[in-house]
Length: 481
Image (cartoon, rainbow, N blue to C red; front, side, top):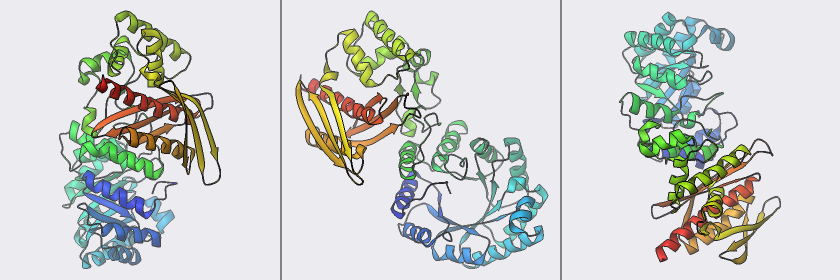
């Protein structure tokens, strides 16, 4: 229910398969009453024979439950609001009428031999004694598990502790927690619920969802494993891969500073931090990035120290003296003071000029980029200098980026056997600030990451591609030496 997101059936199937592979226990596939397309997509997913249990959402009425039953899912998630504010302004029902309606629909669903998961919508703003009455009634009616939703992200952890522990004392079926992140407390509240007796957590990849989103699956799964020693069925090493898939298919960009899956989650710039991480990663990393499918990154900028410069130069096969490292660092800090972000392209340029390294970064240089676009097609003309020779390459695509990519796909596949694994472009919110790009290439388990920074996002993207190509050519050159 993320605003602005409309997934195709194929995209939904792809995400469902990814969640299944990730180890999610129960996947909520959607709300079949919403539209015919939603219903058909759910039915197609259920025919995929996933290992995960499948579930759909249903209001507390016969029409919704019948639609859910037709979808042939394992669980039906039935909900009805219980807070006085919802009863008064939305349902226009009394408390007793709500209990009666919930009991009748659960009995109806159970008669059709499906597992019923019941949610008391807006539970955290429901009087606790009444909430207990509702849960007792639905338990007696046959509900298999109950859910405590913090529907508007209104609760604090201390309140969650009271609510969940009280429900736990009075109810004998599994308890779930469903938190929204309106106050930024969804993960904290979900973990508190587990501490207080909840056995099920509702979570979403990247924390996407209505308004400010829901509990982040990746954050809560890693926290349970690392901080609580609670093992789930989630394959942590696949978390980043699934996060990127959901980001790509939904168009909801993951913030750079997001925990676990954000671009900066395992990136270090401060000289003090980098020195510590190089000496022992535990100094500034709570978990190993590889455990969640990530890699450690050392970022160069005005806060960098000499250890960062030496380590990055070493990754490019260059051993710097102390004097050279100091000189390179001075230039990096100077550019940082001018507001420039230092990409690999800039770093290699500084190495060449300052440290008298060989000019492998200049094996390929960009002379010019020309892109022509019509309504449905883009043509990219790329003028490159390759080992001193001038070349003009052409590529076609539905967009400017695809046209540029197609040039490199042809070149990479034919010449080096590399595939374009992933790419990202971060657009600057201001035309006076730099855009960034990163591209990941892979071949037989080997990975190369190219980076670019420029005022123009397309030039930044091209820089990243050329940077990756230069790294490949350098590696191939070393093999042949």
